[in-house]
Length: 182
Ligand SMILES: [Zn+2]
Image (tube, rainbow, N blue to C red; front, side, top):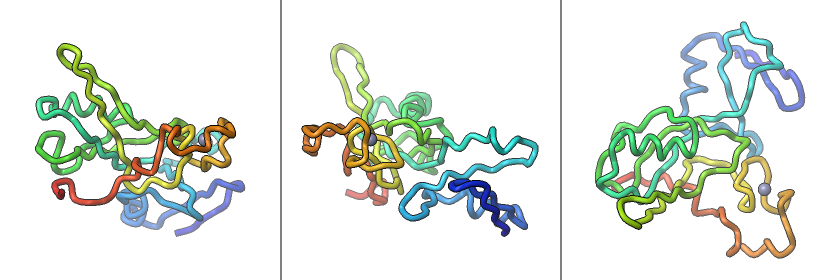
């Protein structure tokens, strides 16, 4: 593998084989460098490097509290899409009795992480689906974005230091327990 630094935060890698490339691209968890997310994109070589957008990273998201009657592929896919561009479910699919469903999405790293989704079902019943992210780097608990922590957030006000008033939190880091464990 060859690497070339294009600017202070942009690197170009050239792989000798497609297998090597796949080993880097098809990992379950995002890549990190010094605790920062590394956004990776495969290019063909026909594009202008200045126009390659590095805004998405694939990640496994866990969706909790989906009512049993609403586990159709289409339903859960639309819920997963709220976290990012839908890629696939894991081998268990969208159905089932597990505590959560795992979906792989391309997360837009410039947007706040999705934490919950309120869905109104028949009548006035409102269910809040919650989202947890596997292998997510540290993110800001004030604005929900990656790339900085709450003490560096531009939305920070003195009084918002209190963790109880923050909308986002450590709970959104998914544990990597098996789906069916207690
Ligand atoms: Zn922030």
